[in-house]
Figure 1: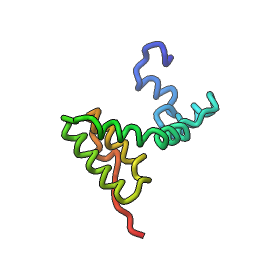
Figure 2 (figure 1 turned 90 degrees about the vertical axis):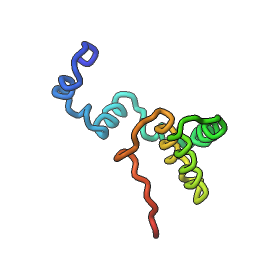
Figure 3 (figure 1 turned 30 degrees about the horizontal axis):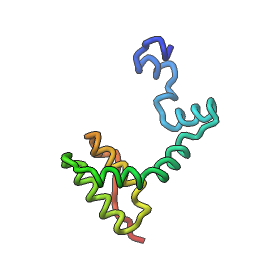
Figure 4 (figure 1 turned 180 degrees about the horizontal axis):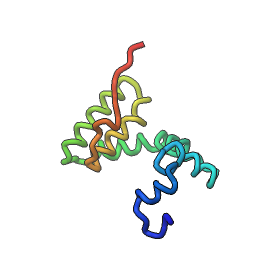
Length: 110
């Protein structure tokens, strides 16, 4: 049914778990023995610095990207541990994606 050209709503009606990220990740893990979340986190940890350096070294004309790079740079001044999360801002700015409601960055005081 999925490969038959059915609409997303039809597929979700028959397999509602595919519309829930937790269920989809669990099902994928059962089928492939691959934990996508672990793989993605590991890849981001390994590649975030290279991505940041690439975007920082290029002469950028995208104002959103320039702003994201400055924001991530400020986050990194506090701790390099912020880069893996901050790289999402950079990538979303590069692809002109909206971040409203998707990522919430806030300082936490302990």
